Image 1 (tube, protein in one colour):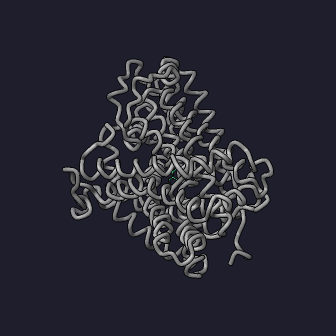
Image 2 (cartoon, protein in one colour):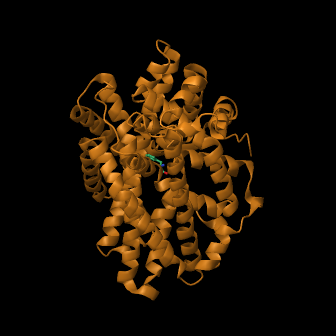
Image 3 (tube, protein in one colour):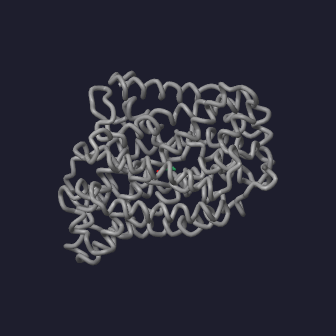
Length: 473
Ligand code: PHE
């Protein structure tokens, strides 16, 4: 099986594909929303610290486990803990989680595509209307856009790791970076933009409560695509002569830079729209920021650059977010796809067919859970609130299980596979890693602080989400 395993064509190709996975809606919108609400550069600083101190070691652990075993997460857990069924639960969770995250992320990506179509076809005024979002998500256009998006994802995945995923990332990632830079430069020329820059870059450490700090870690963890089995899977396509550590550092740097630049785009845009913005009143949710708030900001640009100019800016923005979401979506679907291929021995097309049918059905359930089908709209009740199927999927798989998966991979790699084997894998293709400070830190942190912190986050989330009890304030 491993003899014929596909591989990324080059180290750069791997870095772009992994960065394509990491850079997503989380960076472009989730991060700026969080930074705006939680102390600007103070949040950025904490976020960057978490990327280096917590996320980087977990990235290395996932990539090393993947490259060593040459398997999807289920296969990797099986190979590193042969015959020990308890451990295999971790592998299953690392496949079910990305599958379910792919479902809710698909819904958001469909909406982005819908708004991209809207902006390109000259309907920015409609997108900016109060109440448009609610009518859009229950409209029939969504089904058509779902089909278009599914076809695009299947096209990329069907072509394989090097010809599909890597090639797509090589096209979309540089384009994304250029589009982002152009938008940042443009926004910084707007009136009052600099009050936004000041708001962003002058840290307000008073906002850093325990809850905000925990939020920064969750944000960093999600943003780097950790706990989703993605890096285990992508690691299995890495060449042995490429350094895992230096690739991972590049991915983390690219991801954090995009988050930083996105802050420099969104926060000044908000302030130029309204210099007296009370950031406490802005919504906490990325979804509401992208679909309710930003179209209004883009439309307001028509007074200075005309309706066409405003539509162009909005189109570029939605294209940018669409590229980011598409490369993430492709990476996450590759996890269950590789699992079906490796574990069941199915062909790529058969695996893709099964995956599309399953994910398509659940995505439809999500789409129907915005008021169309009562059972799905009020799917569950917890912490005193009714929750739709879409909400439940996010709460369980994104908010709750993600840190748990991170916890399991730390334990697997250090306590089951053992440190010496991890070191040996990370030293392959990287002479400088042996005995380095990074090596010592990775071994120490994966064994101690990181699993403890991830477990605490998991416990706190369960208490907060399902019982309405906040343990850390
Ligand atoms: N890193 C992605 C983001 O920031 C998270 C993600 C990855 C989501 C893959 C879905 C699929 O948005």
